[in-house]
Length: 82
Ligand SMILES: [Zn+2]
Image (cartoon, rainbow, N blue to C red; front, top):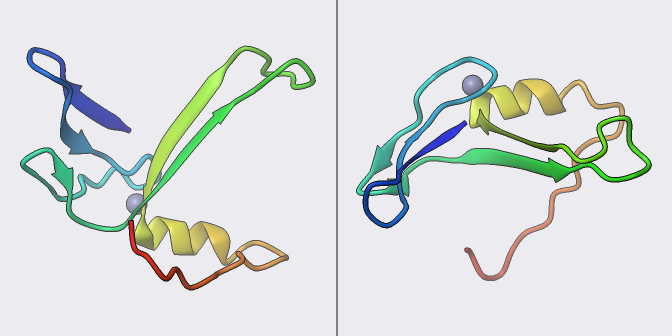
């Protein structure tokens, strides 16, 4: 869950893990730790048609969630970091 300062130009002011509720480290509008940002727009063939879902997970909660998968997360090394 992300909160932005809407008084001036959009500036990130906080990121909270939706799973454990921990506030992630944000400095000067920039997220300073690893975070999984999930965002999905559901369309016509979904029971959630017309809804946008979004959430953030800290790295610990991401690992707890993904270790339950029967097929592991595909991990590829990136040559250019974003
Ligand atoms: Zn968490």
